[in-house]
Amino acid sequence: MPISIFGFQALWSPYYLGALVLITLLYFLITTKWRGKFKDSEPLKQKEALLFVSGMALLYIIKGSPVDLLGHITFTMHMVQMAFLLLLAPPLIIMGIPSWLWRWFIDLPVIRPLFMFFTKPMLALILFGLFFSVYHLPLVFDFVKQDMLLHAVVSSLLFVFAIFYWWPVVNNLEGVHKFHGLKKLGFLLGLSVLMTPACALIIFSSSPFYATYTDADAWLQAMALCVPVGTLSQLNLSGPELFTSMSLIEDQRTGGITMKVLQELVFTVFIWLVFYEWLRNENDNADEITAKVLQDRKEMAYHRHNG
Image 1 (cartoon, rainbow, N blue to C red):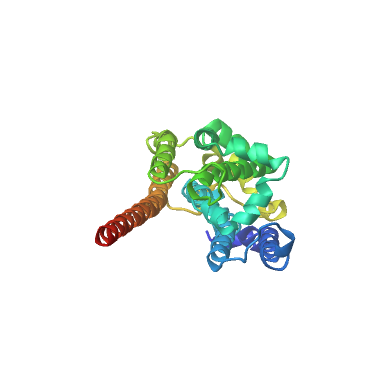
Image 2 (cartoon, rainbow, N blue to C red):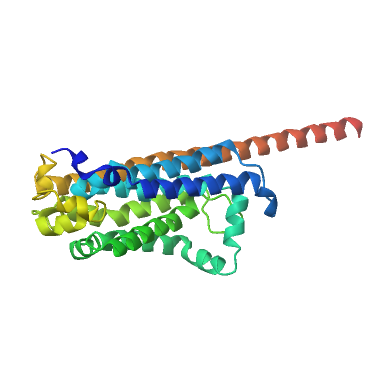
């Protein structure tokens, strides 16, 4: 059965799109036209703008396009959402916001103590890994997915914890929590280890255990999070099997595998970037040392010759 039966609003989330467009417009106004009102501001770099817009576009794709609707229909697509929402969108947005704007935001009286506390690397790692795992416990997951307000709050908290986790890895500010060199690799591997038990539980389960994908009533209630109630009441639906050829257990296992594979792919890219940065810094340091040694030798030879 085609998902077009759910209507334009469920497929394309126009209100969510409008909110993201507004945020993007404010971003460009603050970083260009209103930049002079901020201390130590600098011209917006093309790379920063591209990263931020990419992050906003990714947020819309995974939470506003038909991908979001499919995430309520199949567990596999839900895990695709989780992977991109928590592992790719946060670093794009962090790197897309100029350092001077981050500095202004962090230095706000109420924000600074909270931000500095929650971005402590080990705390951010544990909180994010723990929150992700607890959220995907069947009892918690089914409860959250059947309440619109609670689902919005939990999804927002997951994203905020993801920002806290990625902060020490990709931020460029001085005087805040951040890793250098190979320490970033260990931090990335730490989350991979923490997320493995939850993924393993999902992958190796002998039976499907999420009611919002297996029980018709619970599934319909969860679908009401993204489909207008009026539209949903006009459709005669029995469950997600109408929209996928996978069995419930296949869908659950595929979702767990998909999350783990996407996580490893994203981490592999960032690990390569971290290693490349570390290697480049080491080469730059070696070149500086070599240049200094050659300069010292020239000066010694000059003094000998003129001595």
